[in-house]
Amino acid sequence: MRPNILLLGSGWVPEVDALLDAQFECHRLAQVPPAERAAFLARVGADIRGVFTTGTAGIDAAMAARLPKLEIVAVHGVGVDAVDFTALAPRGIAVTNTPDVLTEDVADLAVALLLAASRRLPQLDRYVRAGGWEAKTPLAPGRSLRGKVAGIVGLGRIGRAVATRLEAFSMRIAYYQRSTAEVSYPRSQSLLELAAASDFLVVCAPGGAATRAMIDGAVLAALGPEGTLVNIARGSLVDEAALVAALQAGRLGAAALDVFADEPRVPAALRESGRVVLTPHVGSFTIETRTAMGRLAVDNLVAHFAGRPLPTPVVL
Ligand code: NAP
Image 1 (cartoon, rainbow, N blue to C red):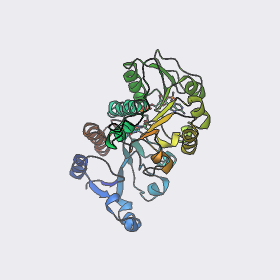
Image 2 (image 1 turned 180 degrees about the vertical axis):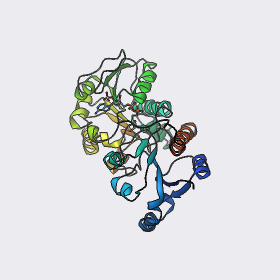
Image 3 (image 1 turned 120 degrees about the horizontal axis):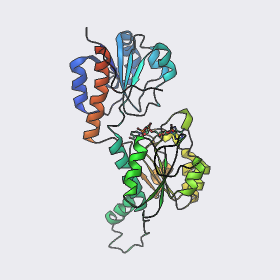
Image 4 (image 1 turned 90 degrees about the vertical axis):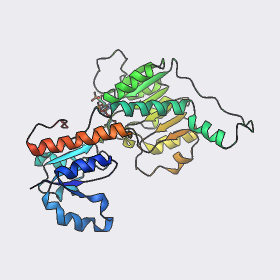
């Protein structure tokens, strides 16, 4: 009998559905009206042996408790902060993710956001569309990157790919994380020290309890009125209220954000600010990368049920 799989969340390419349907009995929670989900889970939960979920949807303790035969959770994404490991680990449930295959596209988006903020692309686009050019409405200049310091918070796979790209813009790179990386870039002793030394702070560390609200009011003030925050990591790393306050008071120059504390809700103060660039959590959202992520997540499920080693297990 084919294993029963529960799919949580959305956002993978259609090919993934076809691959999963070819191997498993698939049950898609997102296709069930919210009011009927409890009954749906009561009906299928006892048979579910695998979960396919996204980095945002993850799996919480309440959901895991409804799946007594659960053996594996395959995350379509690299971030596993929405996975409740304390509920899964005692039951020996494996967790896999999709590292590496998304690194380059997420780094590209970080650089695109940094450039959009420094050269004020959304503002310029709005200016031309609104007739400001023809009306000769005064226009504020952007800021150049050459010689500026890009501080990378979390010099892992994505952080390093961002740093490599920004070096090509003649930026100077510095970083902060807990360990010292084997790189030539200087490592700051603290996040506050990095922020004070940086013109652009690019957040690339994982979400979760250890990093919650680490980009707080003091870090933003250290980054300063001419500084720019770029966040492609997780919204949870930034104290969003402090970010809004810093932008409104002019203590921070600009922000370029792909991720938010309560997605898909974005505070009105950010949506209305003329000094922010906003994208809807699309770091890995290219057809090539989403296809590669989907295939890798499916490969993990297939390997598990075939008794083969997992291609990309999460080892905490
Ligand atoms: P990674 O290779 O594991 O790198 C993470 C880096 O963060 C590590 O070098 C780690 O170094 C550092 N770090 C961990 N905890 C830290 C802490 N408390 N303080 C400072 N630094 C810390 O992960 P990755 O593949 O680069 O992915 C990074 C994150 O990007 C993911 O977790 C995910 O949330 C996010 N992401 C977002 C998108 C998007 O669409 N916007 C797409 C993909 C990934 P130390 O352990 O030495 O501190």
